[in-house]
Amino acid sequence: MSGESDSARTAERSRQGPVRSGQPPAEVNIQREPRRRQRALGFGFVALLSFLAGMTDAIGFLRAGDFLSFMSGNTTRLAIAVGEGHGADVSRLASILAAFVVGNAAGVVIVRGTGQRQWPLLMVVTATTGLVAGFAAADPSPWTYLPLVFAMGMLNAAVDNVAGQPIGLTYVTGALSRFGKGLGRFLCGEMRLGFLVQMLPWLGMLAGAVTGVFLLHAWQQEAMWAIGALALLLTLISVAVPHSWMRHSFGLG
Image (cartoon, rainbow, N blue to C red; front, side, top):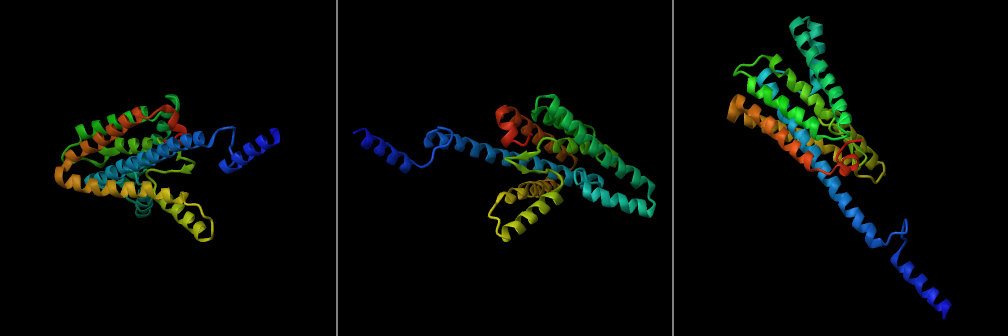
């Protein structure tokens, strides 16, 4: 009788499949579902951050003639200014690049100093964009938007990776490059689709830039307030996100 009972239990376990870490399959599935939702929300949050960067970049470029978050373009323009001997352009573009780098550093300091949280950093971004919107004149100097460059640099520190995928918010060249290399590996037989998420920041920045153009045509300089409003919305979303989600699913660590 005992042998038959043991055989029945063994057969039952084989039908259920392997169980890892002593957890029943139902419990494993319950744990996986929230993680999937967290990742989906994290990638959506990344897209919104890139949307903010794209909107800021388009409005700043059309208003003042300089990129506020696209530093690859500013680097090329700086090189041209140096080569052609345009001193005023050299000093302005060099200041923009320096402000962006310092903003990245400040963002890291803020995130780490607040216990790996995003909302204090996004609050600083919101305050900065609000100040620029409040003080920008109808015909602003390019120097007026230098604080926004600093804010866009800080924004990059809000995300390192999501679910193990490296993410960049404002350097779309890197996103397209990672997507292209992932596509190449897929064509060579590596059946991994993680590279698809690299399109999220690119699409977010593209959509944000298009929206920025529409807002600027409709509202003129008042479109600057839309940047601050979106930054505030992202701050509130970040406040609502549980801290336990941050490391794996919301881009920190």
